[in-house]
Image (cartoon, rainbow, N blue to C red):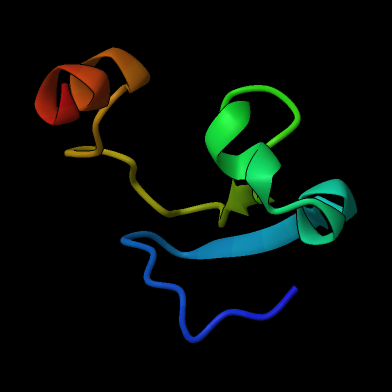
Length: 63
């Protein structure tokens, strides 16, 4: 999976990459909360997630 860049607003570690989404990119749009996930990340120990949106808040924002 190639990416031009990834911006994350907290210190993190990538712990998994979804090879299925790499093989079938349509999954990202078809099932973004199911099989279409891209990365699983773990925030670093002292990183704060204060100020980040929940899924519900994000969905209200983007409609």
